[in-house]
Image (spheres, one colour):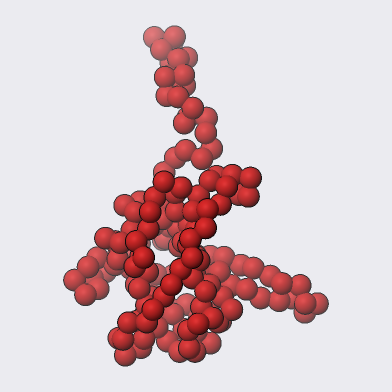
Length: 159
């Protein structure tokens, strides 16, 4: 029996020792760009507060990090104006290799510079995800129903 336990890592393959193996998440982030008093640029990134309000500047961006093998639909995020009118939200996909960050992955970036100052509703419908869990600040994401779909939403205030 001890031999079986000793061989378990070998039977499990390289995934057991691979720091990139493990649960995959569809990770959303709000990325805030700023500047120190001396002019040095700053960058901060946090998970969105789904179900709450996020105030961002036009120079900020939204970001989604997803596994290298996953494909995101174009409408993984939807944006609506305060009156409910759909607002186009176009993202750009980039591949990030291991030598840039911890593990190979894909990122989708949404620049907010094209949006007018105002309040919006940001929506992610579960059906438009990858099937992986979301990176919510609370253990349970605040899933709700939005237009008949299970979704997480937040109010996005561009100021």
